[in-house]
Length: 182
Image (cartoon, rainbow, N blue to C red; front, side, top):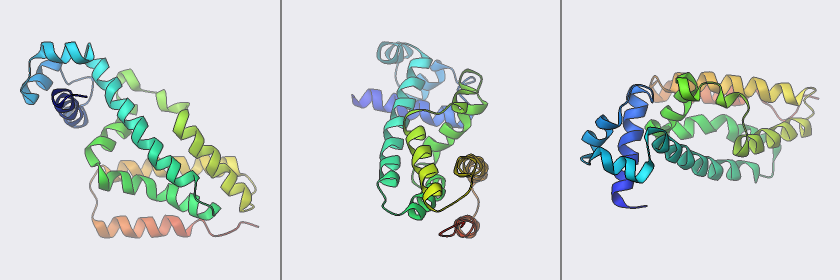
């Protein structure tokens, strides 16, 4: 990827996260990036092409996080690492993940996260198995509950809470999952 392509993607990411995909015109992206709108179209075809490139980056980044979690040996460590994931994502690349979590509210992408695949499915399967190994009676429901809980946490993280609040909530959530539910 060229420097110009990276600049365009970074600018689009920033503006999509700030204003939303639907309301960010390519003319604004071009202006903010200091490039012609034609260059955007040459590299990415259209605004959807830009978003597709950003989503491909998301998939690649998430793949690394998921691999780190699913390769953990202990089931409880996998669950706790999954709980820590949104906190980690927002602390490392806030704008990038803010966009990812906000896409569900944007017209073109609304509802796409309802049937996760790829890395999300791999993580879901690993966490389900972890709950099973820890003798939870309904591991599939535990995963659904955890996903809903972490979705709510992600919404809170977009509001930029204090570090103290983040640490308290993280410890509290992890305390909800002891070694076993036997």
